[in-house]
Each structure stands twice: as structure tokens, then as C-alpha cells.
Length: 339
Image 1: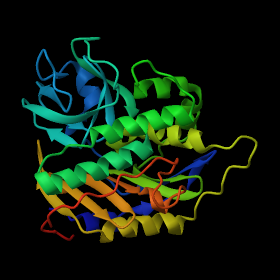
Image 2 (image 1 turned 60 degrees about the vertical axis):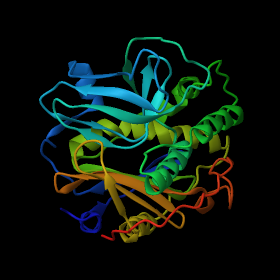
Image 3 (image 1 turned 135 degrees about the vertical axis):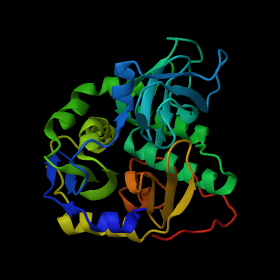
Image 4 (image 1 turned 90 degrees about the vertical axis):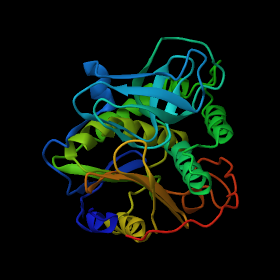
């Protein structure tokens, strides 16, 4: 198995590309050929994957996923599924084998609806906004380590969405995260058009308002290219919230800061957990850094990491956009696997 540390060491950090207050440092070094799996969007479009409620009555923290295709399907942490009884986001990254059916752990991002809008779900082309996704990842890590369950703090997810709606002056009669994105679609899509993938790019370090905020990395350049618009939308919604009118955009951090963030991820202590599909789920939470990934097929298929709130604007005890941080609950010690 390729270690997380050696994979990160093999990456090259490129020059930042910026639009307003969001900068992207490209990462190079992934597989150039086919990855041997398809994305959720591709599988749903081809009719070889189906996402539904687990039963007619539904169950908020779980959905049913059926892969009837000839290849494994990659489901990404934080990507949004819309339809059925209420919209959800994925709690972790899963590589579902060909022909397999699994129950996938999710979080609700539409608090005020529990009625069928469609029989099944479709990918929305978005991911949970960065600040909320970072908090969700940390809560899932804590619950995996303490209870072995990939559950989020559902109340916190709703609180994060409601807080952003209030700060961005967006109304939604069902409290749907999708209404946030749709209300700010013009601005969000400006970021998507401006921040395009580069040839050979397999990942990125993202910087918001002049500070490194997170990382997203894939084993294959083709996967990153397909995922990037969702990731840009995730970061762009946070960027729009803090974008000050009539002020010069903050200078992007130096490449050395992006490299230092990579080093922090590389040196973090990692725990491995059983996956719902292929491979193992990797988790790390150390200081002001939190993240997760999927290690399968002797490689790092997906890795995400976030600078947690007290290390970006907002100060101790507040989120990057002023949201409250829920304090860590005590948990039993986990055996730690260091890469």
C-alpha cells in the first residue's frame, strides 16, 4: 500500500490561480490514465447507479445505493444529492464495487422537508460549503473513533446552514442548502469559470481571503477534473460571504504556505477504519488541521483536509464566517497508525 506520506511527498505545487478572494494552488503528480472506476455523476448519467431512500418511510442518516454497472463507483465526501424526501450530503468517500448495494451514511441539508419530491436522488453538481463540510468531517471522525459509526452531528449541520443563510440574507422555506447556492449562483459560477483545471493537475490547495483553507487530492487527473467544479462551488460560497465590496482582493499566500500545509497533512497521525466499500477510510485530526481520505487499490484514491476555524479568520471559538464551534466531546483513545 502506498503511504499517505510518500504520496504527498511526490506532489509538485504549481503557481496559484486566483479569482477575487479565492486562490487555487494546483497539485501535480497523479495518474494520467483511467482510474478504473467511475464517478457518481457518470454512473447516474449512464443509468448504472441508483440512489434512493432506504425504505418508503425513509431514514435521515442513511440512503440506499445500488451499483449495477461493470465498474466501481466513487462517491465523494460532501457531494450533494437532491430529491426523494429531503436533500442530503455524503458523510465520507466510498468506492462501491461493481454490482454491489450498500447503505451510505449521509447528513440532511434540507431541514424543513420530509416528503417525496422524486422517487430517487440525483447529484446536484455541488458539495457542502467549505466551512460546514470542515465541521462535518471533524464530527464524523470523532464518531468513527468513539463509536465506529460514520455519523455527523446533524444538529450542527442544520445550524451551519441556518447561520450562513442568515449572514447571506437568503430565505428558504425548507432550510435547503440548495437555496443558498441558487440564490448566489451568478457569483458562484464566476469562480467556477475563472478557476479551471490545468493539464496534469490531480489536486489543489485552496486559500480564502489570503489564508490557506484546505486541500483536495485525487489519485487520477481525470477524477480531479470532474470533481473540481463541485469543489470550487463549495469554496466559492464561503468566498462570497466574506468578499468585501469595493476593496482590493487579498493577496494569495505564497507557495511556501501551500507547501507547509501539505507538510502538516503529511505529518498528521492517521487512523484507519473499515470502509463501506473498497479499501480503508483514513482519518486525521491534529491541532488546527482535520481531514479524511480513502486508501484503496494500493493508492490514495481521495484525500481532503481543512484548516480548522481558529486557524483561519474568525479567531478561537468561531468559524471562518463567525459560526460557533462545537467543543470536542471526550472520547476513548484510538490506536494510531502513523504514515
